[in-house]
Length: 88
Figure (cartoon, rainbow, N blue to C red):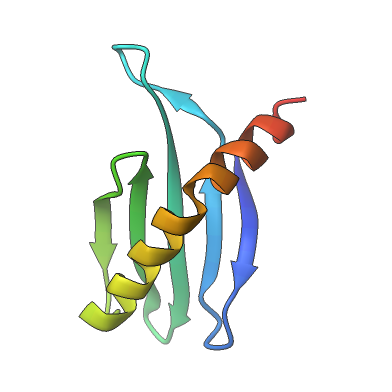
């Protein structure tokens, strides 16, 4: 499942996944930033808690990517909190 977190003025939609587990038992969440374009979407997906980019397609600038990274770093605890609340 994915849940909407925010929508930016440029139509970028921020969504986050439910809590998932890796083979080693580590919990993680994916946070996606997607903006519609004429040919599909600009997309960047971060994995928390590592903040690693696991997908990047389209035309987001490096500056936008930096802003998105700051968003996931500052809001990491909220993404996990909200994902846990959606479990029940």
